[in-house]
Length: 353
Image (tube, rainbow, N blue to C red; front, side, top):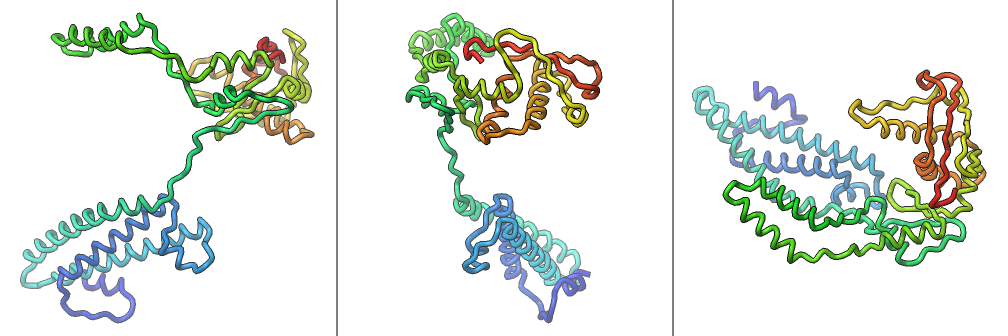
């Protein structure tokens, strides 16, 4: 059966003579490692140099290059199966079936260990050939209108929205932290843990943060500026008071102070809204705010804008504006009906919109 399987998997003529298993095993190890190498490049979506050279002077597209890698990997897998059948046929002996089975298992173990050893030697070189992605250390800061920022404000905003300042713990909080850690120590080591922790705290000099967060906040409030996330990649956009008033007028919102306004949502819009609920263990206030933000984004995007700049900052503006407003539903029906929303609009005192 093994011989018939080997014959059916080959194309063309081949020599049906006895092969030395020691000469077939290295070929099988090499085929397995080549297939693994191509799988590695497919996962990384990178074309090795030997594959790029197959296309001549014109580099292929990413999708076509991955397809070629998959074809080559299938070919190496086919050759590995063929060599494995060839290795098994070379051990076939009608008079020594038990001995052939034992030798076959030994050869499979040798091929497996040899493949792992060769792969461990090959993998570091493959990883080194993958170009590293350059991640920008700072984020971009965009401004609108006549807004100009001093260097310390711009440098602080370039840290991005994901940057956080290390919290400063007071002396009582540090002592309570030492107490909590000492409770995890063995019973006989608790006192020594407390004394050493107190010594470390007394020698530690708690310095101030190097990022002037309070100065940045004071400057933004003084100049009546608003900071919003600019895009999904990170970064901020700083909007002036005039830009905020233009966006409010474009949305049809007039906020002279604490006013009550009602916005009508067209039936064609409210009938197409589908906002999946959050899990039951989520805080209801967070659930309500999330639904309001999604609704405001979807309704606002239907407005025909006259300026590309308004579209660029609209989504970020709605996220800020919703946090300053309070929505209450006028009807109890779920995302249907004649959709009126009562908006208790609260003006932001620090920004003055």
